[in-house]
Image 1 (tube, helix red, strand yellow):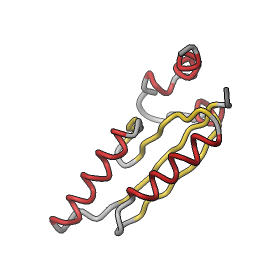
Image 2: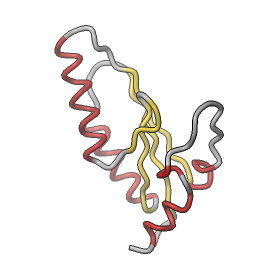
Image 3: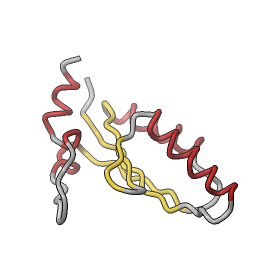
Image 4: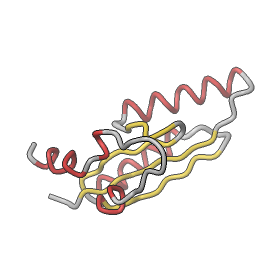
Length: 106
């Protein structure tokens, strides 16, 4: 079993034209279907079981990224992700490090 990693996607997409809004919605739906959780608006993250799984999801991300706007990703270790500090608000339950350990049971 590989080491858990997090793939974080950050994006800023244009939404003035109808075609741009459609591309935005399609990309957001792809992220949700592919197992990403919304951390906050335009910031999504998913857990990956090791580097190989992370690379697979990066390829999917590249295939589904819209042609306009800005889309970036970060790969983080589980420790780096759980060490993220929240200045305002609270962490979601899926950001809890126990969530990754629960996944390793299955």
